[in-house]
Image (cartoon, helix red, strand yellow):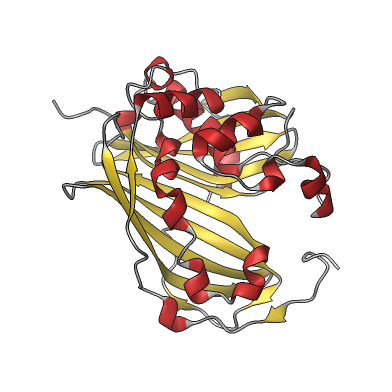
Length: 296
């Protein structure tokens, strides 16, 4: 029986695992790795492709080893195989540069029981060895058909799409294509070795029609769409970038990222966006905050 078909299973999560930082993970950024990640996500921005400055979703690379560790402090190991990446929310304080020596840590800050499963919210910090905060990230891990029975702690900040925006046309629509070899390029560039993205048989054994694209790769597609359309291709202007992973994406898919302007305040403009495959929304509840001008 698949996880989707199973009835909700009551599971006791461990409150004692909340608010406990994992061990520090260290990562040294190279120009070559920045460039490899940009190429692996079809990023058209020259500064990223040249490795001069990292694209926004490259921020997942230094924290990859730390980000899921706190989940097992809260959820029993026997359901860990059911976990999927539900949402990701980046808060940027500065761009990542070649030569940066970064330190990352993560902790679970809350969990919640929902009608279709349960979530655990992870807070991730990435800073330099000197202590300068580079970014904070909120990862929402989702366990389908698992009932934690209660809500404890806090959730990630909201970034819900306002359906009233559909009354007007988006300010930009960016076409994108997932290459047939996309997952094989993204896996080494990101450091994500999960076989569902690389092995056709493993994917089919898991009940999928075939290899699926990495959700964060699709998120990276959306990030360069937003940067090129509303931020002058300048990653330094991006202050926040959040999505919900709504549907699976496959090699060969044709996508579109649609962008709406929401409003301006305190020197920044907020945009809502979504990425679609035909009628299917694959990235939903997209939110981007872009600085109108950078300080001199």
